[in-house]
Image (cartoon, rainbow, N blue to C red):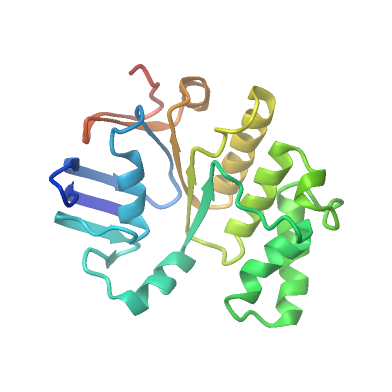
Length: 226
């Protein structure tokens, strides 16, 4: 599903964020990418979504070599990848349903399909009864659930959650992780990027640890000890 082959990424000015990184994430896996700030986690994500290009090596997503992807092909790639961030990035003047619908509207989805898809997604994330509320009327955990529903609008094969619990308390954080596990059970490949030791250790899934731009550990059912 995701295959990084001997990736090196050096930014203008000489800073090398990744050095010879190789990792293969299989379809349907739930993988945590861990490491402290500045270890290369964000760069790795930006390579998978084609926001950055590797200096050396190959990035393959779903059998598609995107190392030199053309600009007009990027929207097609990103429909296959749902993104969830620490910052929920919700539109404050739109309701829960309107926030999710907006992601479909901008891609030209027919109105009839939007009316069918949005309630389904809100039910999956447990917000079926809060579709008319505005972000300010929701808890942080509920706002993140809206963001997850929005990330799923195109039924992506991959969901990347980049520090999705960073702004949440422990209870809400565990609920969001539980939701990600539920989505993974549907067959979606989930890549969780985090530095939260407790979350990773409780998951007991595959853990890939980065340090100074290199993979220092890759364990099934592993834990985060760095």
